[in-house]
Amino acid sequence: MSSFDVETRHGRAVVRMAAPEGARGLLVLGPGASGQTGSADLALACSVAGSLGMAAAVVQPPYAVAGRRVPPRGASTDEAFADVVAVLRERFPDGPLVTGGRSFGGRVACRTVEATGADAVLCLAFPLQPPGDRPSRQPELTPVEVPCLIVQGRGDAFGVPIAPPNGELVLVDGDHSLKKDHAAIREALSRWLTERLAS
Image (tube, rainbow, N blue to C red; front, side):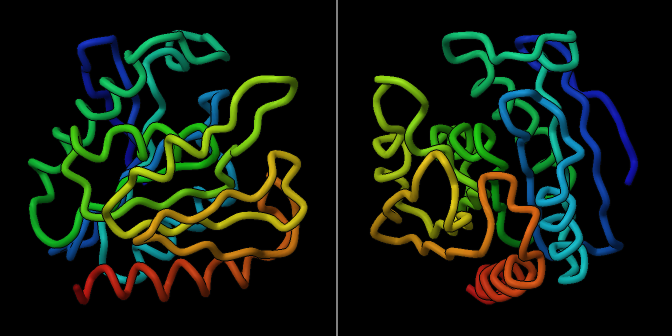
């Protein structure tokens, strides 16, 4: 994967990307709230996308590049993600645009469907119910109208969300880390991304 910076309206983001010649589509993923981009499920999703001829990118948001471990309040992370997607889409305009991410990154993708113009959304380990008395994040997921795939561990401590009307929920063995059943995750991603490329 190559790595390069993208200037957003909220600071510098770092993009790790692999792009085959004549890419047939674009997958852009965001990390969990920590901002770390090296998780196995993100790497797996990029690998599957690449095997299907798609360009695949993982975006480290500006707050994480600046050394912070917690996303800022407000819309800045969403806006920065949309800025990066716009830059990448200019470079890879062909085929479907799929946005998504791991945990918090999936939430960002759901909230920015309109801003990014995404054709589909991929959520890896959607963090449905935060600890304590904070409200469920289901209202961020339910309004998503484009095709949406949620890959969730059966033992996820955040719970299991309800897929939106045009979405699909795939349960796999394991917890929020999605480290246990890579074969099932790969199969689900390959099938769903193939469907997106054909639509």
